[in-house]
Image (cartoon, rainbow, N blue to C red; front, side, top):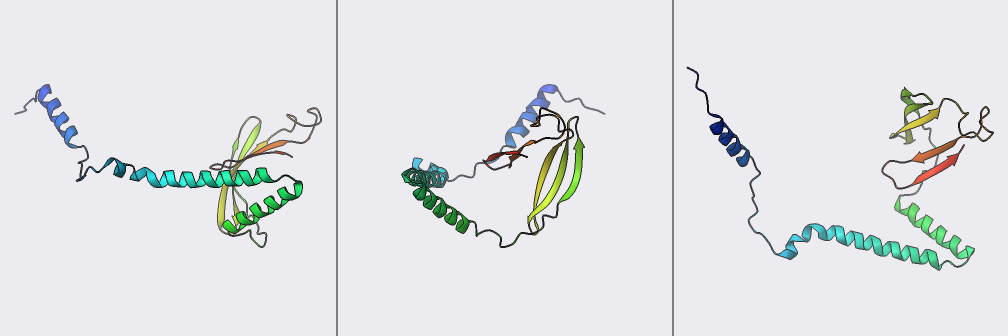
Length: 164
């Protein structure tokens, strides 16, 4: 014998199950208003430190009144930066570029590549290669001329334009 469950009973049962599925609150102590700020304290502290260092560096740059002082500031900044990143490699190593695929479009091809910026340190990239050099060339659109390129690193805050 088949029993039909009334819709109201079924909806009430679903609501009860959904209500009980919420994560239980295991917090024993509520804490003071100051304790609620603990989660943000380190982040705010680091932002404040970065701001102070940025203002100091900006002031040092603005204090360079002559080209010689600017060159000295530039060399000090460069040497500190190189020390922080552990220096540059002593020798150039082969890039070992590998083409992993291509996507053809009407005016250009996207080449998917992987290269080694340092041995066994792999970098992925997409190269957008125009099929025709007529657009944007320096010699009035006739034949092969100079091309502009744009280098954009994902996750970084710099953008560089190049004329090739």
